[in-house]
Image (cartoon, rainbow, N blue to C red; front, side, top):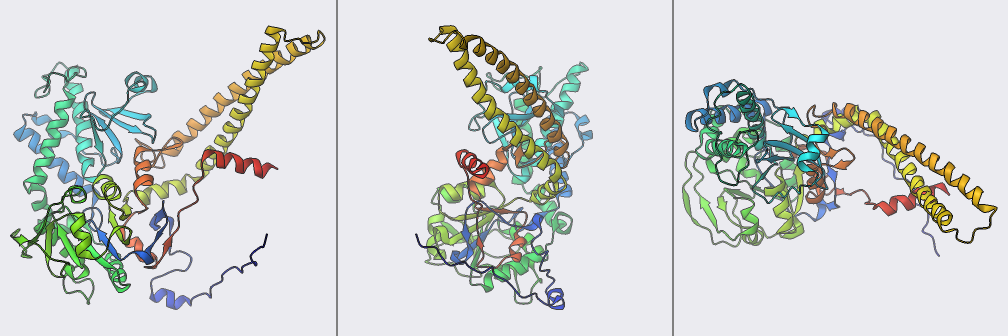
Length: 541
């Protein structure tokens, strides 16, 4: 068989430091781990014709504490003023560390749940109290958590953080009232006949009341009016964002904005983030070849709503009329629409389009299920997750070494148990053994039983050690829930969604600035369990 000639290692001439300084660049440090783009499936930017962006939590980075505190406080006021909740709930404090994305809310029991990729329940909180292993088994060992059921709600977006925290606080609040013998109004009665009460508290109605209140402040403009009155307090202005958009445009990519927010709010926020940042762009809209507001994702990907044109007036949501055009026109503002019409008007389709968003369901999952668009998920928390992995790297290595040892012992234990079964079967049946072999076989079986017992004790000790190290490791991440993307040795539910639906993922849009517009994002080689086992056997030979 012919062999290809040995290829030389590529080498690059160092760039002068003063030139790097002028570019605000560093040859060795341009790709910090916290700012890198990570790849699940190969993505060649050279083949991408159009790059689209969501706005909220994608192009527009909210200041976490003030934004979430505002939603929390407004929701509290709605519950007191409009839903009959006692004034005392105003003392409940928002804790921005308590909720992470990917949790499941169990309305029937008032629980917050973290699951792994296989649907196994890893951690549960009732209010702010963590359930122990026995309580978790009692509630969920034989229960299949079906997310399509109305019993459960997903905490999948950053907008849902205050809602979930308030819900947990209220569960704890009413638990304390019940223990003190105080009235439980307005959650003392079931909202519907099939609701089972948890300790006399209707945690299902509690969820519905919180959800309705937070939906109201979004729907009636209360939240957005406060934000628009003080944009600087609620948004981070990323100086790398306009440079990133300009770089992509300069490389010949068509850019589009596709957001569920409507025109007035979109215009206010994007003006704050982009206006006056680059001399080449007199208006933020000039960065984009198409601006689509009120996109109603995920409906945009599944239905066939027409595009409407909106008058680009700062204080008006006036719809001019339905659009029947063959292509988008720069300077116009569109509303609604659908993927089929979009691809026709953008003159790009399927894998020629990269969409960047933060919402697993609305932005990423539906675009993957109902189209062949390529995807980049913005995981704002990824920077902290990466830093936690770096500071806890020694413990991660210890757990990996323990896992390798446990696997090796498990494999050997399985072999020895099978051998012991054959020995005991032979002794029980006689099996035509020569008389001189029987005592030797009995001695061997007796010794093997003891060795198996020792191996089982070692495994239990290794399990305890791995659990203790894992518990310490979790403190490098979220103090309540541990790692965002992992659950023990498995991917968390959120981590599994990222792996399954996002071709690439990163912490912010401007991380694209660190890569060429024709960069090839290459995914690591995927190995199945048998591939790993065969590889290890081959290495031992």
